[in-house]
Image (cartoon, rainbow, N blue to C red; front, side, top):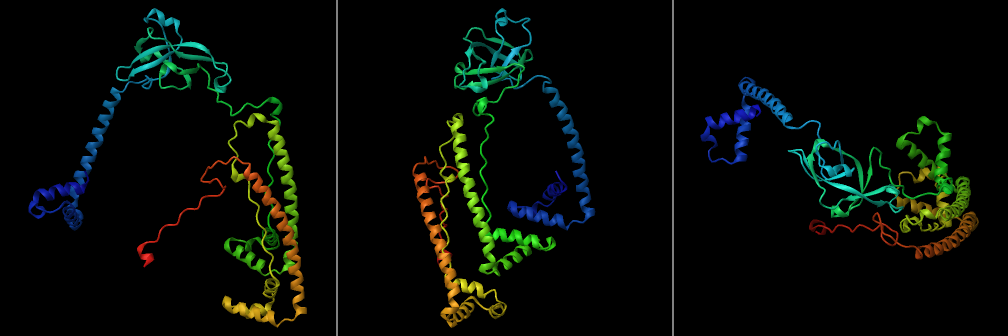
Amino acid sequence: MNAFHFFSADFRSNKKELLQGVRLGECTKILTQEWKKLSDREKAPYLEKSKEMRIVYAKEMEEYKKEVSKLTPVGIDTSLLEQVVKLKSNVGAQSFTSKFQYWYVLTFIPDLQWVHLIPLKKVGVFGPEYPEAHGRTIWMIEDEGNELDTTAAMCTVVKSQTIANSEDADDEQWVIFDGEKPKLAPIFAVPKALQALKEPIKPTNPPNSNSLFCADAKTKTNIEELKGKKCQENLFRSLDSLNMDQKRPYREQEAKLQSSYEKEMEKYRTDLAEWERQRPDTKPLLEPFDVTTIKEPYEPKKCPSSYSIFCADVKTKPHIKEELKGKSRSERADILSKLWHCMDDDQKRPYRKQEAKLQSSYEKEMKKYRASLEEWKRRISNVQFRPHHGINQMGKEPTKPKKYPTSYSLF
């Protein structure tokens, strides 16, 4: 009990009239208010009582622990139930005990340290269907009639493992590791001739043109300036200020990296197919093919119009930047459209040529995309679907239903 509890008991005994007929919650409020009104000098006797009670409690707990430790047996195992054991000695035991090497604990009473044992017998050898016990002796429970009652001090627990579990102990099978560590079952047996073969490593995706520009910009800028959000803002600002000609080298570099990546992926697929062909022992343990590993090809972006190319180019010019600064989106669009309409056909021709080039490359990419999309659909149709990790049978993560609106939202 703390000091407040002593004060509460004292207050209730002395001032019963104040608390008569008052609810428990109101009663505690009154007691806390009265306790807060007391000075340190008035609280001192209750604090001393609390200290004395703590000292008495600590002494009683020490005595209690000593009494409990006397009751608990030392040096004897208290968890022998359903364990495989062997007897330390056959002296004083019945004559048939020498015939059996290992015993199974059917009953164990910890208070009396008494066990009821039944012997185990050899019934054969484990086959290759149990790799962790292949070639070892199968132990099962002996028929009734040779059971033994003895003390737990006569038993030594032996390392064992249940191989064939059953509700009936008579049908269970054990493998015993007497003085040995149990060997873990291998996932699959690999022939020695194939152990040198290594699974091919999948190539990493190449960076895009924006990532290449950022990496290049970081090498040309002081490292002290490239920290946190300021670094990202500077990079995005400089990336937006680039025109089409300045972006071209990074896009060409991206195209080269993409072509080399596709070649590496073709080589990886052939090597993987060869690796799987030469290691047929791994195939039975593989789960059905996961459809999420077949990625749907990305549809190429549509090429920008001549007007969009013109807008991107004009925004980089300093006098246009100043004119557009601080204006709304609609106002900027009006200014750019007026500039576009003021131009004649000769001035618009370079942007239209650039649009034609981008359109031709877009059409080539679309042909390639359609072919890869057909191949993806063909592969998907031959796949054995298996939903897992929240993925549905179409290979896409299911969309979470939206919460219904409340009456307040509807209002």
